[in-house]
Length: 83
Image 1: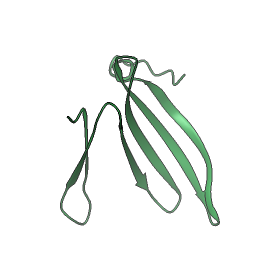
Image 2: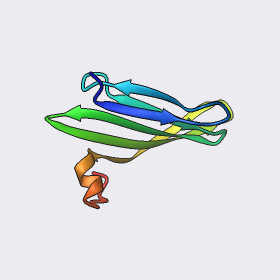
Image 3: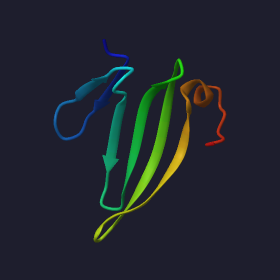
Image 4: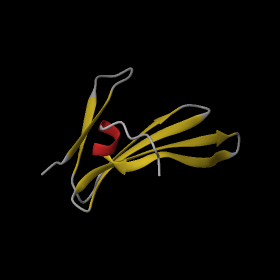
């Protein structure tokens, strides 16, 4: 059974994907300059999220940085400390 659901829209009609507690759900929005990745996962009885950014260089990927990685309830509660 799906625990997570994601949607994407662009030039074509909207598409969706499902993720379970075991698989999680990862989405990546890409540009020529970098990527923003959002991962939803289940850990120790809680839904968690990780938001990261990956720079792109002319020869491939550059450094990545995790902006937030915590239970979703922390994000909803307004706790902005990423660690």
